[in-house]
Length: 240
Image (cartoon, rainbow, N blue to C red):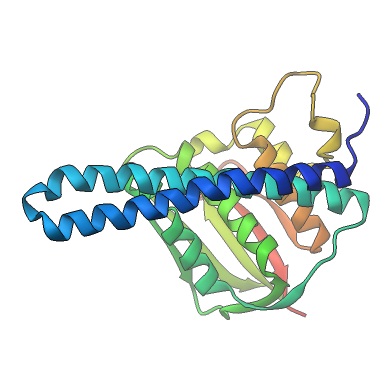
């Protein structure tokens, strides 16, 4: 299969953002209208809350699509050597809390408990803010989708081996060979556009972006072996 150039992927990504962004905008407008109706008609609160759930789901699902295509675009740019990293000091704990909050509808639907726990670790690091947000969101989205209802999904952050260790404690369903290879194997997104063995399992392409982005950041990453107390998908951000 002929390789797709990163420039083409970037243009497609840009074109997709406009219609998807419109869907998000109209979802926001509908949400505002529904809230006004709730204020004016308290007797209809139960029915209108259902509509709020639907508009919120539309907005969140639309934002996921934008995140996926942006992740795909960045992965191509990184592999082509044209990605321009914009490294700044980011407030990692605040960013994690924001990502978790944005996924609140999906989290509530499964009655999950998700929280970022900083065990004495510093709460800032040097990284590209947008890329880090995509890394966190892609990992969280995958694990929410695979988690059983009423589960607990902590994200633990500690300082280990001169770096900031981030562990996404994952459900058992996430630990299959395909997803593990996508996350930490020597893999290229271009070679997987039409894999000979069929489409990757759900979440595979998102994990490939995370893998490629973390390699670009020179961040060690992997999966805890079988037998660990709580298996996780982890990465260690360099602090220097």
